[in-house]
Length: 524
Picture 1 (cartoon, rainbow, N blue to C red):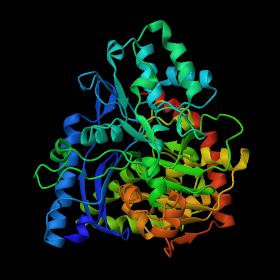
Picture 2: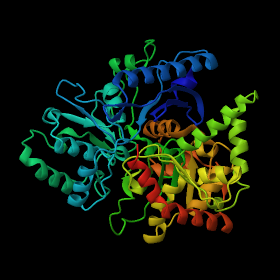
Picture 3: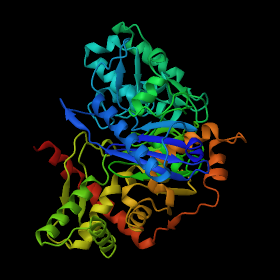
Picture 4: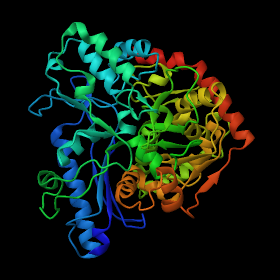
């Protein structure tokens, strides 16, 4: 029971799974819970309903509670601290009665092109389609009636935290995906807030961004405590007690950085799953805005160059599923780990340039590549080397090709330096393969740590621990280095000249044929 009382809980709302990870006072995972879910396309917009959000987190917590009871023979009544994380960006707007004004619009929506372009010009700063400020301004441009009634706008993590604590706050990393944050102040950029106020003044709204956006907090700052109502929302069994400290809610980018010990300057990480993003912690600001690069922050406020790709492994997984069906057709028992392992490892036997084969993995729009809609597309010519190894290698390359487009800007044009890049996510589940592909794409060694498989919920639990388990008052980078990851070594794979040259050749074909993908998008 004492082990549970001194533990820390992280809960993260991912795009396909809600996951809870409980860690002990030594930062080791001791229990987990999960819930599978999917977004819905409603009236042309990607969303999750409030019912799905709460049913999902309650089922996730119930799964954790069941596992703790089975393993340790006790109920979870109180713990050291809790942290909530979720997919960044998107749009959740509420009125004075706390009612959601329109269905939650997720980061995946790309209907904000006009707003993002105008704000990018106004701020002289890249404002991506998925950012909360883009969604808000697009609602204004579209004349949506609900905008006048907004009293609070936040992200999914901010919403959950608000309902559990009553506090309208947000971790700086998540806040930096609502609108630009000034790393000098650790708060929303004041000059940009003023420009936005002047921009929308003709509409006569009775609110300002400063009034409706959540208060920004840095890692380690108190963010309220679990209320009695919040405890009942989370644990429907009624065992969880109120009063548990809660750390600032964070976005999935920040928790990924934390889980991979990549919050220090000149470190980076790549998350590769349903979507993918790379995060490189910068030593200084970039020379100019670039639409491929988002500038966000670490959970403690350091500037981060983020390349975010809407698509990563979905198309790859779909093709693996086709081979699963073939195996079932033959009457052979199916082991998905074996199928992935065989196909992925066989891909390494293919030509370094995939024999000329190309894969565009665009299930949805891909802003980095300039596409507002997606069409998965496999391209080859009659003279290409069409075999299974090249076919799978092309899809593996395709899963990180857009990520390479953005990172080439950082490394080649901005001359950004990085000492270590850590990978985590589903792409790396088959040992060594995803690492080798990413190493070739970024021309950099890639490290995967044992704990990386725990994902963002683990990173969120670490941030919860940092709130109350840091008696020496260490900075977040030092806390992770000296307390959490001291002595932890990952497996590193360095790129080979042949793989790098092959990936570069693949990318030349990829860029040359992007018009084919753009044409496919125009065809129903």
